[in-house]
Every structure is written in structure tokens, then in C-alpha cells.
View 1 (cartoon, rainbow, N blue to C red):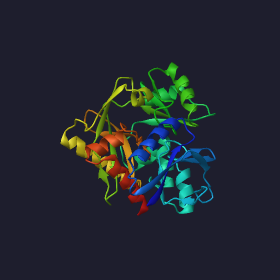
View 2: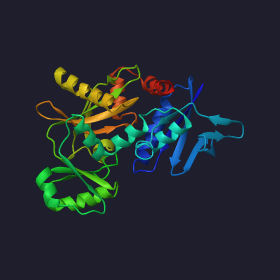
View 3: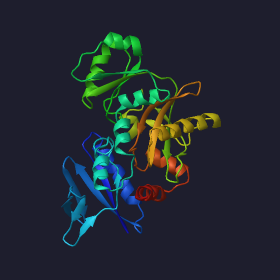
View 4: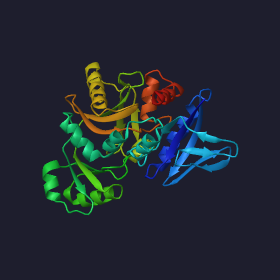
Length: 323
């Protein structure tokens, strides 16, 4: 039996969402193959509740000493959205300890979590992204120049945050400073992107069987101005899996998602969010390397549509990491 540490919590505004993702993973992992342990991470306070007893994790070797035994882990299932699970620190830590984990590597995590830098790299690699500029906290910016280059409406978002925290749709130059200040509450760098007309479609990619495989597409139709926190987690959106697109458009989106997965040397799984314009061109919005894993999250929806049970799907993550 393999000991699997499921890491949850973290130090970002997505803390509670991570707890839900981790619990779903715990519930679905095959208990006849794995001994799963939920590890709560909050700053330097790493703990594990075993049979009602709370144990601290020894971070020198990532182990737990109970009254009966020392528990060491064969792999780490990272279910932390935001820092330190989605932006690289945990990956670097496990690399040092030579403990496998279920996400991409440290570099890829850090790059994709920084929306501003990731967009820059994707454009250099030839992938379509919207126009964007970024502004640094504590430095002045020229609102008129931003308005001239990006136009309105536009989106203002923290460069390093998830779940649409701090994201605003801005329609006038007067509203721009307030939106930037709001985004700065979540990140020291703020990304300002041009508005893209089209359909919001997302595609998961995994490489459990060697070659990258694109999962079925999901289209997101929000009742709000955009796919904000309320739309994501409080029912103000419709998520259609599989997305109702023609075969040519589906294959084009899946190819771009797989090409990004390969170009960035990703591993295990990621989800690429697109805005597909009326001509069928997919523009990259962002890349998620630790996507939401609640029962109704997008990746679980795609997995079920592809014919995987969540037990099988999460088991494949674990087995892939162990290779």
C-alpha cells in the first residue's frame, strides 16, 4: 500500500476551495491501493489529523511520527490552489527531498501562475493571447496610455491569484484606478488585458499514458459580466460538457491546448482556458496547473465525459507521479 499525502489549504484566498478539492481526492482515492492522508498546510504549520489526533509534519523529511510508527510518503498529491502549491515552492521542496508529486515542475508552476509573464512567453512561442500590459505595485502608471493601448472594456486582474479574486471588468478610464487597487490586494503585479469577444471554452490536457491527451471541452456561459467568483462557485453560470462546437473547432482548441502542454514541458495535468473568437481562433486566457477538483469542477466534469471515474482518474495521477 502506497502512502499518499494530499496537501490542502495554503496561504492564499483560495484556502477554503483547496480544502474542498482535497476532500474530494481523499474520498475517491482507492483505499485498497493507497493510504491517503490529508495534510493541512498554513504557513509553516503543517499538520495531519489521524483518527482524531493532530500530528505535526516533520518538514525536514516530510514525515509524521505517531505513537505507533513513523509515516513516510511515497508521493504528494498537491491540491493547494495558489501559494505554495500552484506557484512552485512546494514543487521545489519535494524536488529537494526526492519525493514525487502530482503536478508540473517548479519552473512551470511559477511561470503559469504569473499571468503576466506566462502571456509574454506564450506570445513569444506563437500562441494567440489578447493585448495586455502590466503595472507594478508602488510604481506610477499612465491610465491614458493604458486606455489608448488596451481600450475599453478591459479586464484588470492580479497577475498571481486564482478563482477570479480581484478581477474586474472595466468600462471607463475613471474606473481603472479602483480596479487596479483592488487587484493589488491579491498580487504585486496587475495584468490589464483587452476585451476578447467570443465564447469561453476550457480544455484539460493530461499525459498519463505517455502522449498528451486532450479531454472533452467545456463551455462556460456566465450570467454575470464575466466568469467571476460568484459564477464559478455560487451557481451564476452554466457549464456545458462537452462544449457544443463543431468538430473542426473542437480539434483546433484541443490541438492548441496540447501544443501548449508540450511547449511548456508540462506534466500530469493542466487546464487551459480560452476565449474563442467568432472566427474560431482560440485566444489563451490562462493556464491552471492545480485546477479545482470538487465534484462539479471543470476537470472532474471533463474526466467523467471522457469515461473516467474519479477513482480511476485520481489513481492515474498517483501512478503517473510514481513513475
